[in-house]
Image 1 (tube, rainbow, N blue to C red):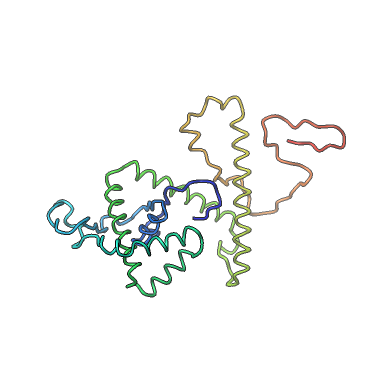
Image 2 (cartoon, rainbow, N blue to C red; image 1 turned 60 degrees about the horizontal axis):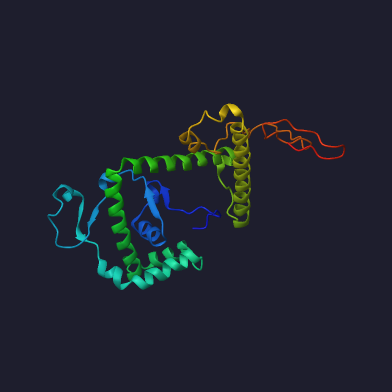
Length: 255
């Protein structure tokens, strides 16, 4: 919800552990889709859209639940559902706080209505996922990007096994803030390095649009987290294709 960029989020990729019926419901209410890679999709149960259609889909009978979506409950709690979704979107209440309140009383009618929305969205997603190979590849590729970034985090945040070895909130926030600075620095330098290579004439026609879309700043093989690193604060990285041109005496040299 608050990713700090100008990007318009349309979908959120997640692995099996990141999906749930309430997750499908809330993301739908917030205006984007939940796209999980469900590991045991053969165990997922589908909900009927309306009651009284027991024999409508004989081929899906083993996967069908015995009841239909309770649209009457959704209609009854519609105003409350929108109220909570708006609170999350505007930041007046966190998703965690709202779900914590609901899980303490799982019989809360608004929570039950959100679950019904989630069940309907999940059923539609599973039906689409099983027949749409492009969607399967999209989710797989999106998760690979996330896994790649997590691998980079392990390289950067390698001390003490990558664990935050403290229970103090201020120290945890400091550790995560430092990790974010390092993440941003690596992605920024990598972007400039890739940009510098692509500016060379030999690469102008070598890459097709598909190749350029596959470029990413999420690489770290050039990062040396171990050993002694000596910094020369009198030099700067040469990140343009042309050599640095010295300016007049007393003026700084710009790459």
